[in-house]
Length: 85
Image (cartoon, rainbow, N blue to C red; front, top):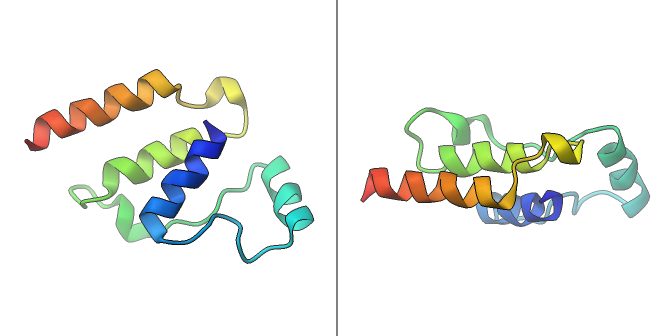
């Protein structure tokens, strides 16, 4: 799921997560629980990318048992799609 968070980050920003950092620097930050920054505007209630931003954060949780599961992520996306369609 953490790797999926990197993909979701790319979808939201058009950039690769940690792209500007040396691999060892990125690894060190990740091990400390750091996450790539998403623009605050993405989280505004009602913003088009609000749900995806929140799910990205949930997938970036440092501890695997704290991360959203693939099934939970799919269900959240399905619920969101059902409410907008």
